[in-house]
Image 1 (cartoon, rainbow, N blue to C red):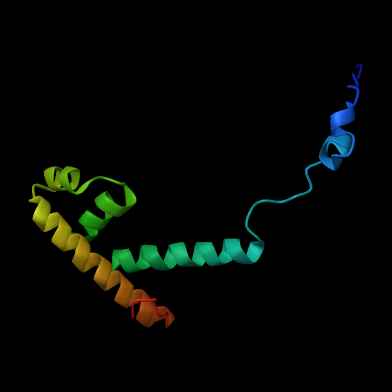
Image 2: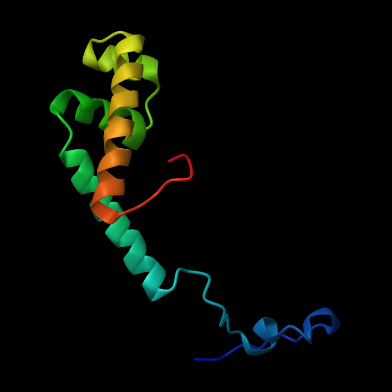
Length: 109
């Protein structure tokens, strides 16, 4: 096998990434941040599982799948007003549940 070398131009001679071909900057989350994010996801998933089914369906479609209120209403056979009301009640329950379980305080509390 033959290796080819490319010449360094004058413009990039001071760029360590170009000079050494390494990208040493890790732009991902730290292990602590990754763990915290995983724990938060698990807590939110658990709290969603605690919702009654009618609220849980709305949350899954609206919040997790990104459907609009109209699309969610059509899919569930509800009015848009009912979807908005269920979304409101589900969010309120989830906020209270997470605040109590994890002793969190929101800025609006």
